[in-house]
Length: 604
Image 1 (cartoon, rainbow, N blue to C red):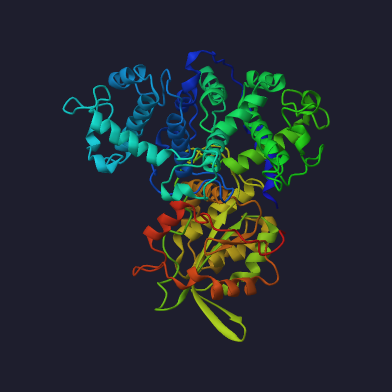
Image 2: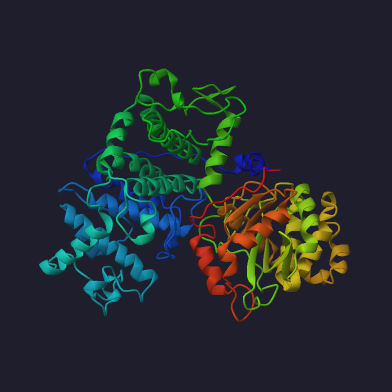
């Protein structure tokens, strides 16, 4: 039951075509910023959670709004800060405010570009967080100065005629925050974004690829010509203004390749956009592999063996090379059977699905990304008692999930106990169940596709409604366990299982009809964000990942309780269970964060 089974369900709903073009003129230097309003993946609330410190790319999960927002600002600020001394103008958003447009038209220098981007960032912050002090806080400017459009009773901060002392202080603060003193060629330590330090080359590169892949997978299914032109213009902008000299130099070497240029010009659909960014990223990865920078990497998807081709190799993406004219992978042609230079229809769909699985959250990026029972199943742990969070990812009719549930059902109690080295260990258990599936719509207007068909979706709606209304003492698990005793007839067993679990069947059915779709959509989105590819999967205390249910699963859990320092620190509040603030913090940061996921067993 690998997540890859979703490929055949996905391919019929993501192909739409569009047309458009982009002119090559003096505005190339700002095309990257100009593209943002047309191709931003998050919609009008992209930065609604900006300010929480996310990680870039560490866990190989689809980015949420926080990660994409921070990656986008990293690209914008860093590009502006590394511009040469003269630039025509810089555009970021669709603001039509006359003052902003006038200031944009007046941009002629690097410092003016930095100031315009700074004002725009503060304007976005002012809209979303009116009480937050604008950057840099040391200046002491009021948030109301950046409220755009500006009410008649207020005054907007003016870039023209800015006091020279204030100008220098702002430029110095921007330079300290966004420019590495030795340039992007110098590799700094990792996770600099967590410390609000200037991005190094690795961080900038990851931010850029996060932005590009996420932009491609969230393109509208029927984009208009302006969106297409903006997306294509991003690549021309890289050629002119990308802040990393080493990266831009390599880009100059391969971007003029006639095959790439033809494929760039031929982008007409969402599929085309996804595949072009995929190929471009693999070209960059291949260059690093051949130069010995990343000897252990492989073209994406690294472990995928395509039916008609096998594993991808560097010869298909080595551009430029003496043989790249005939050896490189072509995107425009579709062949009957895949070859090193051509993908057949099925392999194209598989690559698109893998890119989407990596970079796109099911149901979109603007959703709660929470999927817990509304009330804690148990009270808070006793003083000194350890805590165990166990997340189980399943599908409603997955037979291996049913077998796993049958084996662990008796152990899911408020106090989880196990034996280790002759001693009995105990921890207060916070157990959560999540569903895995497809949402080809949005969170608000879902188009749900359960992997095992419509009956599975009906069962999942009932099961999540049981979790919604009967969370105390894990009563809902008795319903799930009963349903899992014969997954082939889910959801027919619902009346029998509701009775055996002491539940009101009418309440479950009413919930399934009224709330079930929303609950399943939220669960699918959360599981997708967590990068879950196999069911069943367990995650212990947000960091140890166990795929399948190995025979020594209890030993793995017991060892984790004994050795994980986080298990000794209670996150529960006096009100009982996991506190909402802690849960919010875990979800907003990404529960796994930068911690290593440890594979506890071979996948089933």
